[in-house]
Amino acid sequence: MITLLQIKNFKAHASTELGLSSINILTGLNGIGKSSALQSILLLRQSYMKNLLSKGLDLNGDLCSVGTAKDAIFISAETDEIEFEIKQKNKEDIKLVFGVNRNRIIDTFLRRTSVSNLPIPDSSVFNNNFQYISAFRNGPVSIYEKDTAIVEIFKQMSRREGRCELVAHYLYHFKEENVSDKSMTKVKDKVKDDDPTLKFQVMEWMREISPDIGNIHIEEVAEAGYKVEYSFSRGEGETVTNRFKAMDVGFGISYVLPIIVAALHTRKDGLVLVENPESHIHPAGQAKLMELICKSAKAGVQFIIETHSDHIINGLLVATKKGIIDPEDSRVYYFDRKVSTHATQVIHLPVLTGGKIRKPPKGFFDQIAKDMTTLMGLKEWG
Image 1: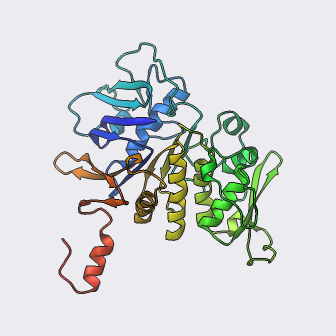
Image 2 (image 1 turned 135 degrees about the vertical axis):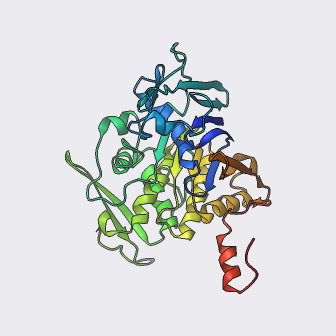
């Protein structure tokens, strides 16, 4: 598990230090450095996957595209070096420094300041026990893509930019494997013995988030890929509806599917990066999704989540109050900006026993209070 991520001179980060735990939530206004914190990990991983990390940092690839050296380096950087440091529990630390040549500011590759061999430990940043689920993930499509190597050998749901375009192939291939930890399994009504297989548990958790779903049907369509259809419940004791194509079902179901799969199937000591898990999900569904994520984190999976949803935050706090996850196993960070330097400024908001955050800063999910103040004709907020 990553215990510390330090970023220097990268995009909006002059010097940012994030102490990390099992669940890590990054929130704050737009354009303040949350996504680039995730990109620091993605850039290291994609450079490693291309066998380039011993020589430098590839700014554009399958996981993310930053652009050129000019785009990558902090606008007010006092040195010509970008630095990433990752500390890990019971594993070797990683510290990498990359130089920016001011005479070649449009380069798309940054060379390491030292070109010695790079010993990479068995880290979740680089191994197959990793998933990236981006804000750009696929909505419903007529045919989900197939990639045997990426799914069945490297165990990834995405080939490009965390889009999860391979989620149907992934679920189809691993459907009979057990979920990573029994603590996440749900028992179907009137069934004495639980079914720990990925297919069954994905369906059970999907029903928690969207209660009327009857089943998910995935069909292999020769070399083309996979077709996904959904049926819906008509009530207890009634037959389910006919199947509906994914294109005819709400976006939220397709958006949440890869998150459920990752939470259930990522193994202990794995790493899952998720952007905007709340996308197209009803507040009650967001709360249930966070319950699953907290159970997965308790079982040993590390999550770094970027969100703009108070329901995701509250889901974590409720799970803490219920004892699903311990306060010390989560970190909440509020991202702000230091106006004078246009640099990211991070505020750690400790989660307390009982699921509370003490004295959150102005701007931390206080819009409802502001709006209610206006609607009730009270004195202006703040």
